Image 1 (tube, rainbow, N blue to C red):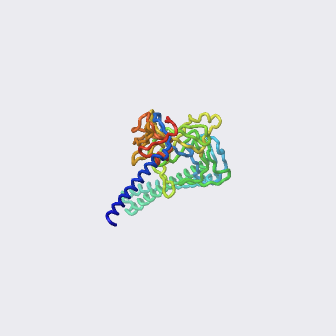
Image 2: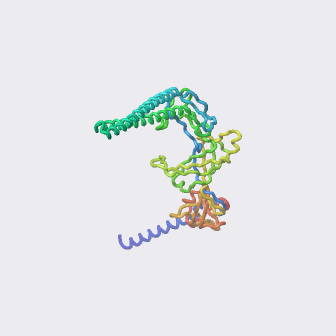
Image 3: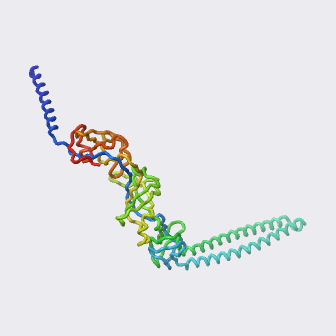
Length: 400
C-alpha cells in the first residue's frame, strides 16, 4: 500500500470511531432513564437483634435411674403428676436383698465370735509369755522354751488382728447389703412434675452403682423454662449473658414472651452445610415467668418441653440516630456507599460509615445528614444500573 492509501485509511478509521462515539452519546441521551424510589434521610431509634430458633425445655430436669436391679412391684405416680422431694416414686422387689442382708448379718455374727475366741487366745498367750519370762529369770526353763512362748504370743496377736479386720469387712458387707435394700425404694430427688415415665408396673429394670442403669422417669421443674438455640460463629460474638430477648412460640402465636440470655457455650458444634461445615454455639435463654402469668390461670404448665420458639436477641440499641433502609447501601470498592439524589435528578455516590442494624434498617454514623435525599429502591438499580452522575426518574416523592 502506497503512502497516500495509508493516509486515507487512517482518516477513515478515525472518522468511523468518532461516528460510533456520537451514536453512543446520542443513544445515551435518548435512552430510558432509570426509575428509582427516593427517600429523605431521617433519624429514629434502632435496636439490633439476632434471630435464632430453638426448643423449650426445663432449666432443671433430673433423670431417675435405679442403683439396684429387679422387678417393679409398686408404682405410685404417672406422667404429669406433681411430686414432692422425698416422695416414694416406686419400689423394686426386696426378697433378694432381704436375703442378702440376713446372710451378711449371719456372716458378721460368725466373724465376731471368731474375733472373741482370738481375743481369749491372745490373752492366754500373753499370760503364758509373762510366766515364761519369770521362770527364765529364775533359770527354771531354757531359752528355747522362752522363745517358743514369745512366738506363740506373736502368732496369737497376728490372728487377733486378722480376726479384727475380718469383722470390719463383715460390717462393711452388711452396711452395703442394707444400703442396697434401701435403694429398692426410689424417692423423688426434687420437687416437680413427672415429665416422662419410661417404665410400667411389673417391668424388670437394671441398676448399677458404677454407671447409669435403666432410666425410670424424669422429674422437671416447669416453673423455670428455657429456650435452647444455636447461633452462628459470626453472630455469637455480639451476644452476652444478660441480653434481653423477645420470644415467640408456635403454640401461642398471638403472644410475645420475654427472656434473658443465661449461658453461651464456649465450644462450638459443627453442622454439615453443603460441602462444608458451619460452626454453631449453643445459647440458653431463660423465659421470664412474668411474661406468661395469664396462661397459668388455665394451665399450671403452659410451656411444655419440645415447643418450638423463635428468639430475637437484643444485642445493642441506639436512640435518635440517622437510619436508612438496608437495601439503600451498596459496596464501592471496600467502602459502603449510597446514591445521593440532587435537585436536578442526578445521582452521586456518597461513602458512609455504618453502625448497628436491625432486620430492615441500618445506622449511619457519618456521610449523610438529615434531610438529604437518597435512592432506596429498587435494589437492582442501586447495585447494578446506576452510575455516577446519571439522571434518574423518580417514581414517587421523597419518602420518610
